[in-house]
Length: 397
Image (cartoon, rainbow, N blue to C red; front, side):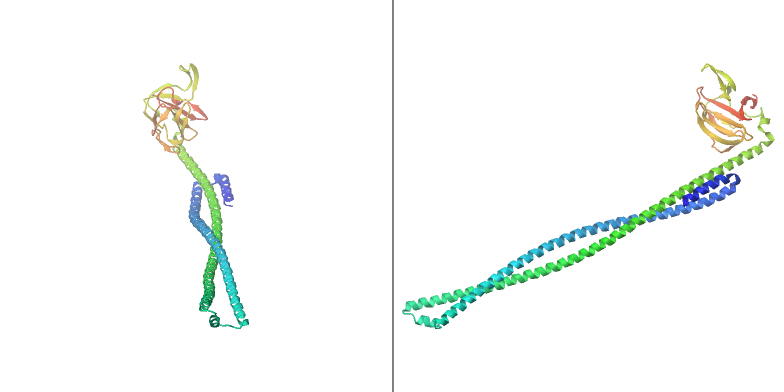
């Protein structure tokens, strides 16, 4: 939209130029300068916002990366805890099998006791003392007594061993179950933390997406403003060119008014010479001994000392300073009423395009720029729609 407005504005300026005054252009230039300053301020503000968003993006990317690393570490920890949990469950199962085995052994021993008591009961419930006293000899009594003690001791020790194993294995099982509970609690906590970190990462990723979207919008906005500023600069350049053109035309008009009492045709034979020196080549058709041919000279060539002054022959406005092949550095001055003077082969130019000069002002110095005949000034007068013989217009000497 901004671009369309600027294009329309440029078209309007082109159509309306002939109807506008210098004051109109200056007012428009002021308005456009104000508009471009506002755009510059907006562009600067937008650039600051983009820099701020860039910093936020870097921070967000760093946070997402750190959260990803934390998630990876937590996943490894949970995996290790799952593995340890499985090992503990395996150990508990092994302990349970040992407990079952010992309980079975203890049960077998109890059954053995019960069977022994049942047998003793069926045989008359003879006490151990009676068995000893019923011995046929004292030696048999001693053997029986020792045997009963050994049997009783073995049974008691076996019973005690099995009970001790049951107690020890039971303790180990309790330790393992306690460790398992801790591992499961730790796993739940890690999984909870993992879930929280994943949630944080998703939130941060959403924020990162928002930041990047904002960056894109700001860059598009900045691009649009920069295009607008470029269009404004084109308008301002055009206005300044129009102002310069009007100023130049005004200077020429004033020059023409100043010369109105002495129009160029009336100054014939009264104009001062542009430089000291002799005329080495006259106006018109001339024989060139170096080229051995006849050439057309549109002006005169004044041979002078290198570095000697070259002056404007009349007041006017400098319209051109350029380098022309075969003529070297050339200055053209507009004197109004359609008359111009041309100065070629000059060096060290002392004036500028659109500068106003007075009669006798030093505009450059004698040189050999573009010359094959050494240091000289090539001087022309244009007027009446043609090139004139300068010697007819310069003072006689």
